[in-house]
Image (cartoon, rainbow, N blue to C red; front, side, top):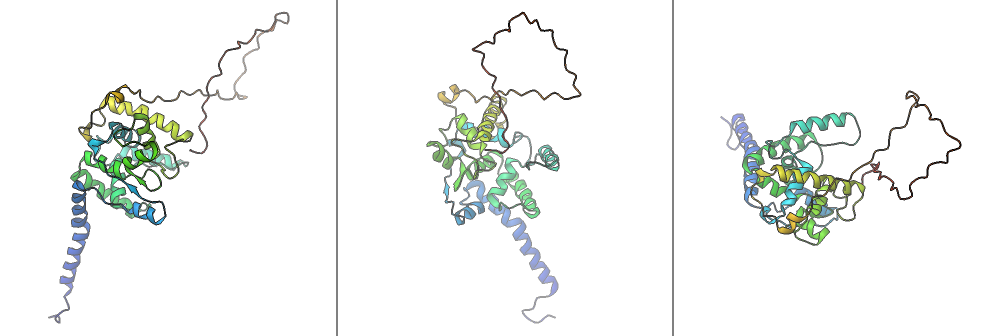
Length: 298
């Protein structure tokens, strides 16, 4: 027999197993169920930014009181297969991995579900431990929340500037309107800064954000017309002004021709008639617009 107060090895193992079960299963599931109905009061990133002196502006707004353009822009920019996958887009992850192997700017293949799991439950630093927990919480929210709640939480807790979280706070800060009044162009601009909200600007943006927001706006039209946001469910009806607003168009580009090389034979020169006067150039011919991708974004 063991002395009183000194548990045997099997009892200690049982206690550790119960503690592990509570920590790994009960607590995450309970917290996920709680946030299914209650807005998250804060996130780890919000607390971190407060200690960094960046302030805190976090205003919850339900999905049915947001402009549908915000949902469409988010799906167009961050996760085109949001309504098709169960939390993980393996095709996008494979493409991102191949791109990163080639070097250059690192790209991620995270879905909106994965980003929401990270934003709400975890810390921002990258590590294998965090990625494993992110996958676990992604499965939980896909199972216990559903697509509509995932989108609602995502749009409310995403960092959109220094000390600014969610589309309601961002819409008021940048455009002076509530999240249900933003236009399609403004919604695309808000989503365009998500990759780096502390660097990119929604107001007076640089070339990268300006062009990215145009691409997002054009793609959001496809999301709207093809029903790619149907899993989110019923949203506020579009107003007459929103229906009349034209979707942002992608800026047409003109590529400069590649320089000739020695391997490319030059065409034979045409004979020049010295007596003929040179043909005058049209005075009003506009120069073609040329867009060059900047080396550094924004």
